Length: 409
Image (tube, rainbow, N blue to C red; front, side, top):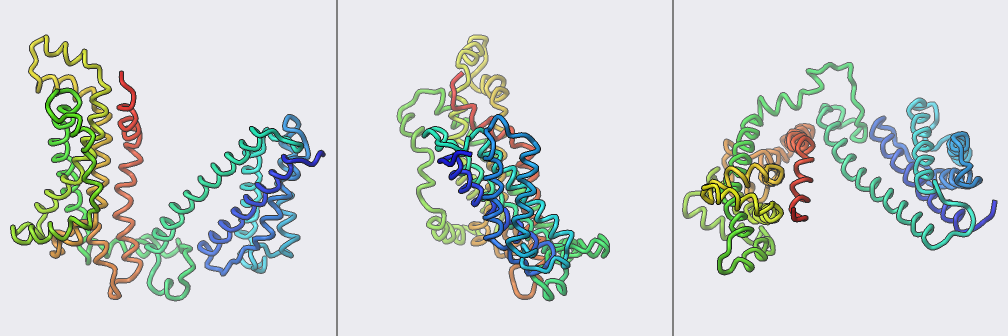
């Protein structure tokens, strides 16, 4: 085996993947079992380097599944030897099956990562392109893992905490394992109490009404406005088109205080109507921006043909433009709904009556010493899951609507 830049890069990436894998697995083991697991980082890093070295023993064309199996075993053996049989600083007799599964998962993750990065890289001297390729692949994989952990870990802690009882949380806050033998009634007790004692059903209803009404009002203003900017000729068209998003240069926190004073004088503070005035004011600009790009991408010949057939301008919009713009309308509606559903600042400043709290405002009302922590987490889950399901369901429309207007038809 010729020692060169390929092998050196392989060892470095192996060290990185081994370190990441053992750290994430150690944290996960602590949260799952409640045991104070402290992963041996040096063992994971060395095991990752050994794994990469085994893979680089052969040329890319000669790397068989058997070689990767040997590399997989190399991670396990190295970790156990370097850590003296305690890769997570725990006696292997404690949760031995989970620890063994964790070590196997580390070996699998490291082998997969090294294979993905080094699949066509030789161990000898590399050209600049190959070096850049390894670096890009490594950074891409690291970014994927990093952001996945940032998203998944807090969500996991939130969900598991919401399923715990007060006594278990006091005994061991790090133990986020779930006892399935306690039954569904006890497991979801926090969620039941939210709807029976903390009025969360009304919070959901208010948030749904406000979000849906915000979408309807936003579309009612943004569709004709975006069409006018995209199709009609009038003085100041270019200025208006390029300055639509200028409102976002002003921080919302700056607008809250004057709006609070004005709404208090007009009797609109502490009302749902006040929110239905403020929310569309913040969502119409972005809806205008998204829709005008899509309208410009639609063939103008179809609208001209409709005008020649006797349709009015409004008829053309209703019968031709809007049916063609359904993907964009769906993406704008989803985006506006998400903004209204998750908005907190105005709801926190304007609403004092618990009977008209939105969901985000209601969740914050649980953040007190009188409310158990698992109820706060359950409220956060209730606020997160609906919008997550809606986003995943309509995500294809969001992507299509955001990209379709970038290329003219």
